Amino acid sequence: MTPSLETPRLLLLPLELEDAEQVERRFPRWEIVQYLNAIVPWPFPEGAALAHIRDVALPSVERGDAWHWTLRLRTAPDQLVGRIHLSREAGNNRGFWIVPELHGQGLMTEAVVAVNDYWFDVLGFPVLRAPKAAANVASRRISEKTGMRLVGATEKDYVCGRLPTEIWEITAEEWRAVRTRFPR
Image (cartoon, rainbow, N blue to C red; front, side, top):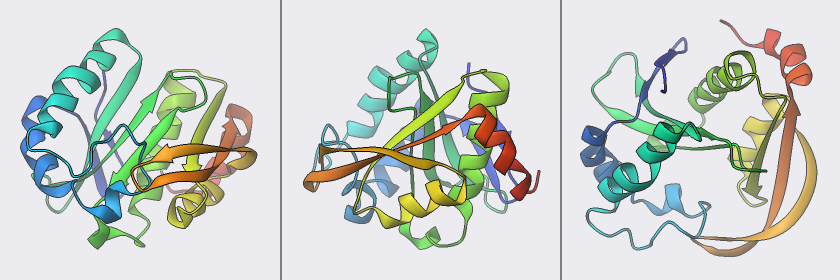
């Protein structure tokens, strides 16, 4: 099961079916979806958030293949502002999004630190890999800040089309070396 996690400014709460309504309102924005995997339907159809949570996300948690959290500001714990997940999927272990109004405030970096700790220290995985569109500069900056290194390149299909893709990686040993940069 997915535990609750906390950062200095965020609550990371396990994804639930009840979150579908807020995801449905906050997620379908071009600024959020453009660099997501092309499996995300666009335009985002009504009911797609519920279907994804019910039929994909929560079953993957039940199987022990993934861990899904909603992101909420500590100052407004009832309002979902993003999501982050971890996955056993080979070469694609972490993904996230946050509402554009909160970009550039370091909130997603806080969430990444929390889930990286969980990935390495609780689940015990030796490496974390995260592919991302090369054009997704904000996501690349988070990878750089959190000690990841670029290990490969390919092309993938995103909601916005086929793009060059960077493969970022960090090992447990590398994570523990950079973890001291971030407050607990």
